[in-house]
Structures are given as structure tokens and as C-alpha cells.
Image (cartoon, rainbow, N blue to C red; front, side, top):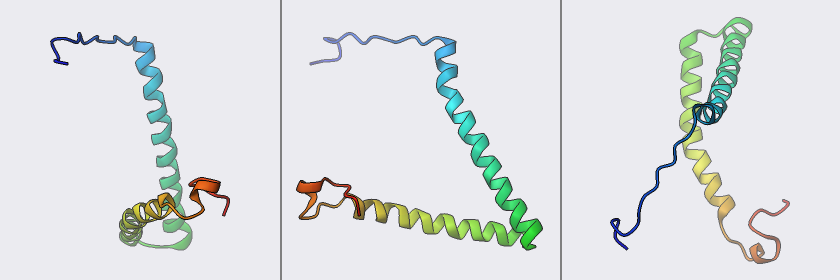
Amino acid sequence: MNQTDVELEETIYSGLNILSFSMYQIVWTITISALNLTYFFFYHTVVGLEPIYIFLAMAIFTAWDSINEPLIGFLVDRNFKWTKKWGTYCHF
């Protein structure tokens, strides 16, 4: 089928509909920002680390997580001999 054969329909969303979809991102951003602020406050005030060391620790964690997350995802999604019986995600 050509694009000329099929008419493309545009869906017009209302402002309230768009606002309701964007509220999720706002709530998520505020939650993550509050959590990061709590981490920074704890490590700087209670533990007494300098901000550069906090940044370095978070950068190392982010680099480790960028390698670790896809690796664990690959290992979890692999097929094993018992996958057909219990499914991909088994209880152990």
C-alpha cells in the first residue's frame, strides 16, 4: 500500500488530555530530585564528604549501572531448559 492509498488521520488531543499525560513526568522529576537532594545532604552534612567526592561516587555508580543493567537484563531474558514449563521469569 502506498501512503496515497491510506489516508492518515490526525488525532487532536485536548489541553487537559496533554496536561494529564505530562503530570506523570512532573511528579517523577520532583520525586527523583528530592531523593537526590536527600542523598547529597546526608553525604555532605552527616558523613562530611566534599561535593566533588559525592559527584565522583555518583558518576562511578552511573557508569557501573550503565554496564550492569543491560547485562542483568540479558541474563534474565535468556531462555533456559525450564523456560517452557515455568515461563521466562520463574520464582527463584
